[in-house]
Length: 355
Ligand SMILES: [Zn+2]
Figure 1 (cartoon, rainbow, N blue to C red):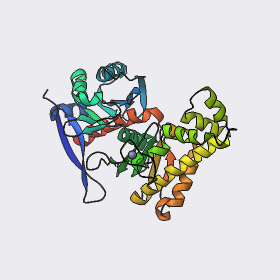
Figure 2: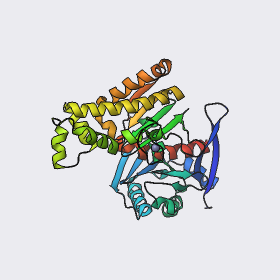
Figure 3: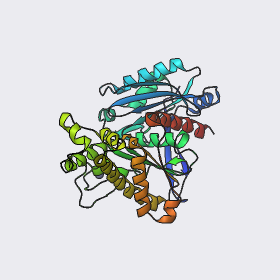
Figure 4: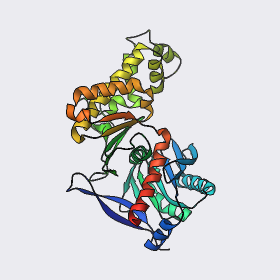
């Protein structure tokens, strides 16, 4: 078996004159053909985040057969993934055709190395791709940014199913985004396409981790919803959050729960957050005239309370013919999204090259 090579192939994409390369690492072509034409039709998808490692054995339709989940071991991420893969392989009736891994960072398509990860810097130092190939003996291993993988999961088997073009947003501790055009992830010139959290929402706003001021993330990420709520809480001593704050720090999930329970102040904070997100969404709608927008992440667990506010504001601020063509929905796959999406990307990379 020869050393793995990285191949490129271009995919025609809108606008017509623009192409982007989708990367996939393969072994030698004989090996690839053998795997593709064999009966192997199961895949493993892995999602790693700042806090968790989630792995899933997935069939060719994107259905999860089995899962593994653990708190992330920051000092031994590769061995942890390798253990999970080994356990899932033991459960698979057939061979594993390919493995996809969603990482909180950017992957260099030339080297398959993670070269940026502010959340998990240790994966930048090692060569996760090479370690996984070495440990598993499987050459078809694909690394992808986690937001892109999550988007692809929703696109294939979740809330994006049936659409051709989709914008995906995940709102939690941070805010991420991903663009799928004509069924393919749009990476952009340097891999950063879809940085939705850093759309400017207030030119006079506070400083963001990215260096800009007034980014959406500075008001609508979970920690910033909590910050804004604290800043206003003294104005409303009757809120159930005021009582909660006496005993412990509250979270964005607490605010959403109290809003659902009818607390007026919590409801106002959720609605205001929805307005910020909706204003940013209007920019996306005007820019891309996109068919579907899928919203996920912990903050969206507030459900219709926040979704209704987002849709209302997006409708108020976007160009109406664009808005009317856009469906705005909540994601369906929850924490399975990244593992499923990573597995489906690995599946399609094998199929596209073999086909
Ligand atoms: Zn920013």
